[in-house]
Image (cartoon, rainbow, N blue to C red; front, side, top):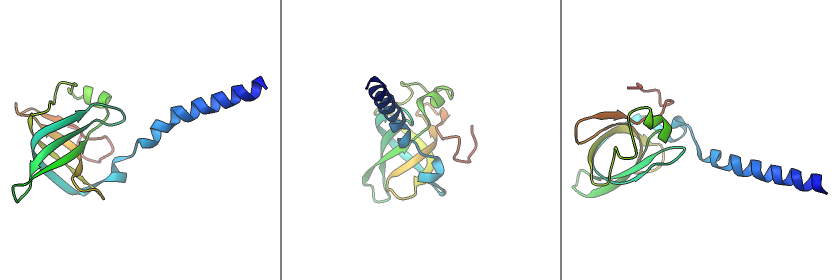
Amino acid sequence: MKFKSGVLTALWGLLLAVAPAGAHHSFMAEFDQKQPVTLEGTVTGVEWQNPHTYFSMDVKDKNGKLVNWRLETGSPNALLRRDWTRETMKVGDHIIVHGYRSKDAPNIAAARSVTMADERTLFGGQTDDNGPTQ
């Protein structure tokens, strides 16, 4: 009986450990390199988390209406290696983003690079988006 409960506990633990990995995806699965986008606006939120960091921003569309975009970058660890910190981007910051649109979701994109208000440009892309790494 102890053996069965030990095996069940181990399997349950393994399932819990693997579940978050299912949320991870490759760049090519979600974003389209043939749909580049440049966005300029104000940061409205930052989510510093694994497996990807996200931020949102308000951008004026061609009619002057504010549209909220959700942008994905690399993992926090990858961003730290590229001179990002949790304090790099704050709500209210004015930024310019060059990236790639989502294949099937409006107002979602992968952020390849982000130009900050102080004119620093930081690489935010993923290593599998087939673009330059700097």
